[in-house]
Image 1 (cartoon, rainbow, N blue to C red):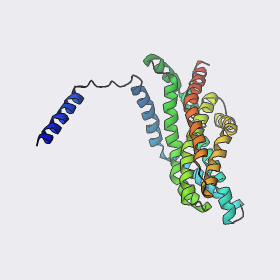
Image 2: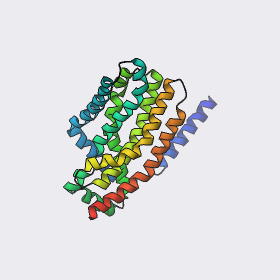
Image 3: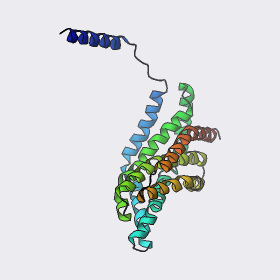
Image 4: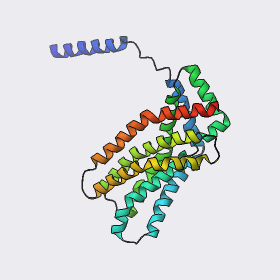
Length: 255
Protein backbone atom coordinates (compact mmCIF):
# COMPACT_ATOMS: atom_id res chain seq x y z
CA UNK A 1 0.00 0.00 0.00
CA UNK A 2 2.81 2.36 0.93
CA UNK A 3 4.51 1.51 -2.41
CA UNK A 4 1.37 2.50 -4.37
CA UNK A 5 1.15 5.75 -2.46
CA UNK A 6 4.79 6.57 -3.18
CA UNK A 7 4.33 5.77 -6.90
CA UNK A 8 1.26 7.97 -7.16
CA UNK A 9 3.06 10.79 -5.38
CA UNK A 10 6.02 10.42 -7.75
CA UNK A 11 3.75 10.37 -10.82
CA UNK A 12 1.95 13.46 -9.58
CA UNK A 13 5.21 15.30 -9.05
CA UNK A 14 6.42 14.36 -12.54
CA UNK A 15 3.08 15.43 -14.11
CA UNK A 16 3.14 18.77 -12.27
CA UNK A 17 6.76 19.40 -13.30
CA UNK A 18 5.90 18.67 -16.95
CA UNK A 19 2.84 20.91 -16.84
CA UNK A 20 4.81 23.73 -15.21
CA UNK A 21 7.72 23.45 -17.69
CA UNK A 22 7.83 26.37 -20.14
CA UNK A 23 6.80 25.56 -23.73
CA UNK A 24 9.66 25.44 -26.22
CA UNK A 25 9.05 28.14 -28.84
CA UNK A 26 9.10 27.07 -32.48
CA UNK A 27 12.11 28.32 -34.47
CA UNK A 28 11.53 31.51 -36.43
CA UNK A 29 12.37 29.76 -39.69
CA UNK A 30 9.92 26.88 -39.20
CA UNK A 31 6.83 28.62 -40.73
CA UNK A 32 8.82 29.63 -43.82
CA UNK A 33 10.11 26.11 -44.38
CA UNK A 34 6.64 24.64 -43.85
CA UNK A 35 5.23 27.08 -46.41
CA UNK A 36 7.88 26.11 -48.98
CA UNK A 37 7.37 22.38 -48.41
CA UNK A 38 3.56 22.77 -48.50
CA UNK A 39 3.74 24.69 -51.80
CA UNK A 40 5.87 22.03 -53.44
CA UNK A 41 3.69 19.24 -52.15
CA UNK A 42 0.43 20.87 -53.29
CA UNK A 43 1.94 21.58 -56.71
CA UNK A 44 2.87 17.91 -57.07
CA UNK A 45 -0.55 16.71 -55.89
CA UNK A 46 -2.25 18.86 -58.50
CA UNK A 47 -0.14 17.12 -61.17
CA UNK A 48 -0.16 13.41 -60.25
CA UNK A 49 0.77 12.53 -63.81
CA UNK A 50 4.32 13.77 -63.14
CA UNK A 51 4.76 11.27 -60.30
CA UNK A 52 3.47 8.44 -62.49
CA UNK A 53 5.75 9.59 -65.32
CA UNK A 54 8.85 9.36 -63.08
CA UNK A 55 7.98 5.80 -62.06
CA UNK A 56 6.97 4.88 -65.61
CA UNK A 57 10.25 6.20 -67.03
CA UNK A 58 12.23 4.14 -64.50
CA UNK A 59 10.25 1.00 -65.38
CA UNK A 60 10.55 1.63 -69.12
CA UNK A 61 14.34 2.11 -69.08
CA UNK A 62 14.93 -0.89 -66.79
CA UNK A 63 12.60 -3.07 -68.86
CA UNK A 64 14.14 -2.18 -72.24
CA UNK A 65 17.70 -3.07 -71.27
CA UNK A 66 17.08 -6.85 -70.96
CA UNK A 67 15.61 -6.87 -74.47
CA UNK A 68 19.03 -5.98 -75.86
CA UNK A 69 20.86 -8.61 -73.80
CA UNK A 70 21.21 -12.35 -74.05
CA UNK A 71 18.21 -13.92 -72.24
CA UNK A 72 20.47 -15.70 -69.80
CA UNK A 73 19.63 -15.54 -66.05
CA UNK A 74 23.32 -15.26 -65.16
CA UNK A 75 23.78 -12.31 -67.52
CA UNK A 76 20.69 -10.54 -66.19
CA UNK A 77 21.83 -11.14 -62.61
CA UNK A 78 25.27 -9.71 -63.40
CA UNK A 79 24.02 -6.59 -65.22
CA UNK A 80 20.83 -5.99 -63.23
CA UNK A 81 22.24 -3.75 -60.44
CA UNK A 82 23.96 -1.43 -62.93
CA UNK A 83 20.87 -1.22 -65.13
CA UNK A 84 18.63 -0.38 -62.16
CA UNK A 85 21.00 2.35 -60.99
CA UNK A 86 21.24 3.89 -64.47
CA UNK A 87 17.44 3.90 -64.73
CA UNK A 88 17.15 5.53 -61.29
CA UNK A 89 19.72 8.19 -62.22
CA UNK A 90 17.89 9.10 -65.43
CA UNK A 91 14.51 9.24 -63.66
CA UNK A 92 15.89 11.56 -60.96
CA UNK A 93 17.56 13.83 -63.51
CA UNK A 94 14.38 13.95 -65.58
CA UNK A 95 12.43 15.12 -62.53
CA UNK A 96 15.02 17.61 -61.24
CA UNK A 97 16.47 19.12 -64.42
CA UNK A 98 14.10 22.14 -64.48
CA UNK A 99 13.66 22.43 -60.71
CA UNK A 100 14.29 26.20 -60.49
CA UNK A 101 13.90 27.21 -64.14
CA UNK A 102 10.13 27.81 -64.07
CA UNK A 103 10.31 29.42 -60.62
CA UNK A 104 12.81 31.96 -61.89
CA UNK A 105 10.68 32.74 -64.94
CA UNK A 106 7.52 33.20 -62.85
CA UNK A 107 9.25 35.44 -60.29
CA UNK A 108 8.75 33.03 -57.38
CA UNK A 109 12.48 32.88 -56.71
CA UNK A 110 12.71 36.68 -56.41
CA UNK A 111 9.89 36.63 -53.87
CA UNK A 112 11.57 33.75 -52.06
CA UNK A 113 14.89 35.62 -51.78
CA UNK A 114 13.14 38.77 -50.53
CA UNK A 115 11.04 36.79 -48.04
CA UNK A 116 14.08 34.98 -46.67
CA UNK A 117 15.90 38.27 -46.16
CA UNK A 118 12.86 39.87 -44.49
CA UNK A 119 12.23 36.89 -42.19
CA UNK A 120 15.91 36.37 -41.40
CA UNK A 121 15.81 32.82 -42.77
CA UNK A 122 18.97 31.68 -44.58
CA UNK A 123 18.26 30.96 -48.22
CA UNK A 124 20.24 27.73 -47.85
CA UNK A 125 17.60 26.39 -45.45
CA UNK A 126 14.86 27.06 -48.01
CA UNK A 127 16.93 25.32 -50.69
CA UNK A 128 17.45 22.37 -48.32
CA UNK A 129 13.69 22.09 -47.74
CA UNK A 130 13.11 22.24 -51.49
CA UNK A 131 15.67 19.43 -52.00
CA UNK A 132 14.01 17.25 -49.35
CA UNK A 133 10.56 17.59 -50.93
CA UNK A 134 12.03 17.03 -54.39
CA UNK A 135 13.64 13.79 -53.17
CA UNK A 136 10.26 12.56 -51.94
CA UNK A 137 8.61 13.43 -55.25
CA UNK A 138 11.37 12.16 -57.56
CA UNK A 139 12.76 9.15 -55.70
CA UNK A 140 9.59 8.04 -53.91
CA UNK A 141 7.90 6.60 -57.03
CA UNK A 142 11.18 4.97 -58.08
CA UNK A 143 11.58 3.25 -54.70
CA UNK A 144 7.95 2.11 -54.85
CA UNK A 145 8.30 0.25 -58.16
CA UNK A 146 11.94 -0.86 -57.80
CA UNK A 147 11.10 -4.23 -56.14
CA UNK A 148 8.81 -5.17 -59.04
CA UNK A 149 11.41 -4.20 -61.65
CA UNK A 150 14.16 -6.05 -59.77
CA UNK A 151 12.26 -9.33 -60.10
CA UNK A 152 13.06 -9.59 -63.80
CA UNK A 153 16.79 -9.51 -62.98
CA UNK A 154 16.48 -12.32 -60.42
CA UNK A 155 17.69 -10.40 -57.35
CA UNK A 156 17.30 -12.30 -54.09
CA UNK A 157 15.77 -10.85 -50.93
CA UNK A 158 19.08 -9.71 -49.44
CA UNK A 159 20.15 -7.99 -52.65
CA UNK A 160 16.73 -6.35 -52.96
CA UNK A 161 16.98 -4.93 -49.44
CA UNK A 162 20.46 -3.55 -50.13
CA UNK A 163 19.23 -2.14 -53.45
CA UNK A 164 16.41 -0.22 -51.74
CA UNK A 165 18.72 1.05 -48.98
CA UNK A 166 21.31 2.13 -51.54
CA UNK A 167 18.71 3.81 -53.74
CA UNK A 168 17.30 5.69 -50.74
CA UNK A 169 20.76 7.10 -49.92
CA UNK A 170 22.07 7.45 -53.47
CA UNK A 171 19.01 9.15 -54.96
CA UNK A 172 19.17 11.73 -52.15
CA UNK A 173 22.76 12.51 -53.17
CA UNK A 174 21.72 12.69 -56.84
CA UNK A 175 18.83 15.04 -56.06
CA UNK A 176 21.16 17.32 -54.09
CA UNK A 177 23.71 17.42 -56.92
CA UNK A 178 21.02 17.90 -59.56
CA UNK A 179 19.45 20.72 -57.52
CA UNK A 180 22.73 22.64 -57.48
CA UNK A 181 23.15 22.09 -61.22
CA UNK A 182 19.53 23.16 -61.80
CA UNK A 183 20.16 26.33 -59.79
CA UNK A 184 23.24 27.11 -61.90
CA UNK A 185 21.30 26.50 -65.13
CA UNK A 186 18.13 28.33 -64.05
CA UNK A 187 17.04 30.84 -66.66
CA UNK A 188 19.28 29.43 -69.40
CA UNK A 189 18.05 27.82 -72.60
CA UNK A 190 18.21 24.03 -72.38
CA UNK A 191 18.37 24.06 -68.58
CA UNK A 192 17.40 20.38 -68.27
CA UNK A 193 20.13 19.25 -70.69
CA UNK A 194 22.76 21.42 -68.96
CA UNK A 195 21.76 19.95 -65.62
CA UNK A 196 22.23 16.41 -66.91
CA UNK A 197 25.64 17.23 -68.42
CA UNK A 198 26.84 18.74 -65.14
CA UNK A 199 25.53 15.95 -62.90
CA UNK A 200 26.53 12.85 -64.89
CA UNK A 201 30.29 13.02 -64.11
CA UNK A 202 29.65 13.69 -60.42
CA UNK A 203 27.12 10.84 -60.22
CA UNK A 204 29.68 8.18 -61.13
CA UNK A 205 30.83 7.41 -57.52
CA UNK A 206 27.23 7.03 -56.37
CA UNK A 207 26.49 4.62 -59.20
CA UNK A 208 29.67 2.60 -58.59
CA UNK A 209 29.21 2.13 -54.84
CA UNK A 210 25.46 1.51 -55.20
CA UNK A 211 25.99 -1.25 -57.77
CA UNK A 212 28.89 -2.74 -55.78
CA UNK A 213 26.68 -2.96 -52.68
CA UNK A 214 24.05 -4.99 -54.58
CA UNK A 215 26.70 -7.27 -56.10
CA UNK A 216 28.14 -7.89 -52.62
CA UNK A 217 24.70 -8.79 -51.27
CA UNK A 218 24.11 -11.15 -54.19
CA UNK A 219 27.33 -12.96 -53.37
CA UNK A 220 26.50 -13.23 -49.66
CA UNK A 221 29.13 -10.69 -48.62
CA UNK A 222 28.39 -7.75 -46.29
CA UNK A 223 27.52 -4.49 -48.04
CA UNK A 224 27.98 -2.22 -45.03
CA UNK A 225 31.11 -0.53 -46.39
CA UNK A 226 29.47 0.55 -49.65
CA UNK A 227 26.31 1.74 -47.88
CA UNK A 228 28.42 3.64 -45.35
CA UNK A 229 30.20 5.43 -48.19
CA UNK A 230 26.84 6.38 -49.69
CA UNK A 231 25.77 7.67 -46.28
CA UNK A 232 28.94 9.74 -46.02
CA UNK A 233 28.29 11.18 -49.47
CA UNK A 234 24.76 12.09 -48.39
CA UNK A 235 26.03 13.81 -45.22
CA UNK A 236 28.54 15.85 -47.22
CA UNK A 237 25.94 16.71 -49.87
CA UNK A 238 23.41 17.76 -47.21
CA UNK A 239 25.93 20.22 -45.76
CA UNK A 240 27.42 21.63 -48.96
CA UNK A 241 24.75 21.49 -51.68
CA UNK A 242 22.14 23.77 -50.03
CA UNK A 243 24.78 26.49 -49.60
CA UNK A 244 25.97 26.16 -53.19
CA UNK A 245 22.39 26.13 -54.45
CA UNK A 246 21.57 29.27 -52.46
CA UNK A 247 24.60 31.10 -53.89
CA UNK A 248 23.62 30.08 -57.43
CA UNK A 249 20.00 31.18 -56.97
CA UNK A 250 21.04 34.53 -55.47
CA UNK A 251 23.27 35.15 -58.49
CA UNK A 252 20.47 34.14 -60.86
CA UNK A 253 17.99 36.53 -59.27
CA UNK A 254 20.48 39.41 -59.26
CA UNK A 255 21.41 38.91 -62.93
